[in-house]
Length: 193
Image (cartoon, rainbow, N blue to C red):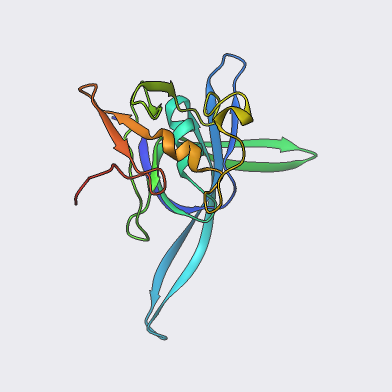
C-alpha cells in the first residue's frame, strides 16, 4: 500500500530554491487548498476553510517546479503528507508538509504548455546548426563572452534579446532527434493538436 495523496490548490508563495549540503536541488512553496460547497439558500458556491501545506520537491522535480510554477497558479500536487508538531514556550505548534512526487498545473482552472525534459535537457543551437551547450536555469554558457563580439548594439527595431532566440532552442527526444522549440511559447515548433 502506498501513502500518496493528491492535493488541489493554489500556489501562495514564490518558489524557494536551494541545494542541500550533499548537492541535491530542492524547491518549495506554500499551497493553499480551499474547499468549496454549494449553498442552497443563496444558490451559489462558497469557499469554506483553507488548509495550508508546505510543498517540498527534490532533484529534477525541484528544477521543473522552479521553471514552471508561479505564485497564484492553480496546481495539483501528488505526494506524501507529513504532519509535524513541536512545543515552544509552552505552546504546541503544528505543520503539514507534502513531500511531492509530482506537481502540475490544474487544467480544470487554466491551460498550460508542456515540454518534456530528458536527462540531456534542452539544447541551444548556434546559427550554423551545430549543437551548443545544454541550456541551464541560470543561463550560463548562453551568448558570447564578449558583448561586442556579436557586432555591438542591436540594429533599430531589433530586440536586444533576439540574439538568444536566433540561436534556436531544441528539445532532444527519446530517439536523439533535435526538435525545434518556439522560444516565446515553449511549444514544439510544428506541433499540431
